[in-house]
Length: 119
Image (tube, rainbow, N blue to C red; front, side, top):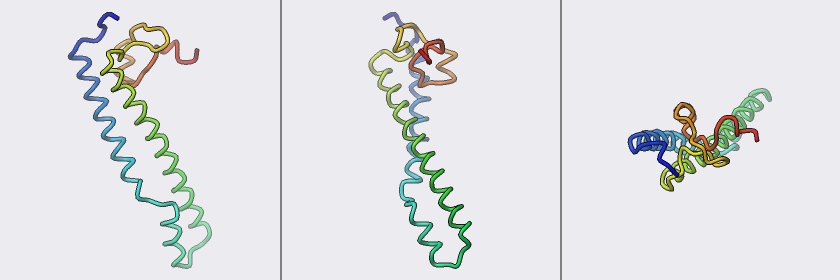
């Protein structure tokens, strides 16, 4: 496979991905200690309106959903870092064609060309 990204560009994308990884891990660990029942148990100590409980439950479910998205994103980031190490980063997994740098700038975890995404 010919080199489509020079060492400088690869290092640039690696640094961006490492920063993205750090941010995602930080956000995930910030929410790890929270148990869905913690806030509900707190609320049980007070006379609260049922709507307060529903609001709290909604927020917990939203946070859990966001955490799942962050964990999926973390897997994508780790996969991209692994592709850098293997020397396959920046090439489509479907066609082997180079992924344009503009696409990698917008989405450093891109695996394929835009036109290949829904194939």
